[in-house]
Image (cartoon, rainbow, N blue to C red; front, top):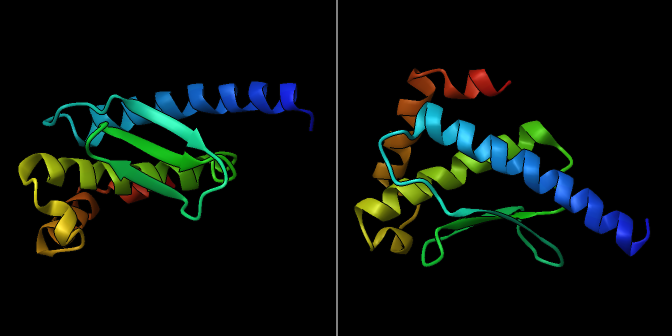
Length: 116
């Protein structure tokens, strides 16, 4: 695809992802401050990551073409956002008991089933 096509496709994905982000925040994370947004990135070695200083999620552009996978990754990063708001030290041990507790809570609320 040419550069213009890539830009157009990225813009379409960003709109869809922003909509998904807001819907997931409203449904499962309504008690926390919303993120500033989601951004597609290229040439990185991760599928997604949360940047606490900027309060955004970066999602690899190649993952964005898979809506369900993107939603799972957004939820994963929203958990990090929630825990970072509770403790500035969350990044030191990101997969702590608090993280597992959030996963359990979402499982009990059928959040993951709802994404399927």
